[in-house]
Length: 81
Image 1 (cartoon, one colour):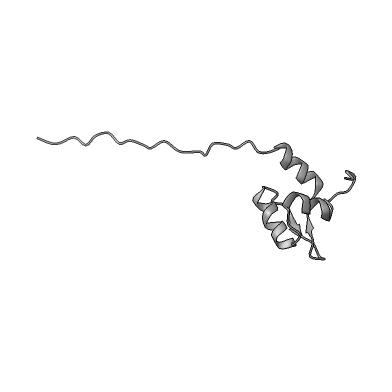
Image 2 (image 1 turned 45 degrees about the horizontal axis):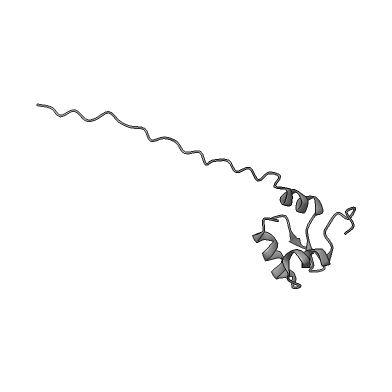
């Protein structure tokens, strides 16, 4: 594997996805979290090596808890005598 290349080679993508068809490769890469993978002009899958390494290392995978606003409670309605 030549680490100086900007994008993964065809054989590397096939090894990661276990598919040889570009549409299936792309679907599998997106399923695995490589959302920047895309089809190139020639129809092959392009995946930047830096993105691949970042996803594999877990960079940016710290999930933040969703912000939930606490409910606003109204005081009980007083009954008139």
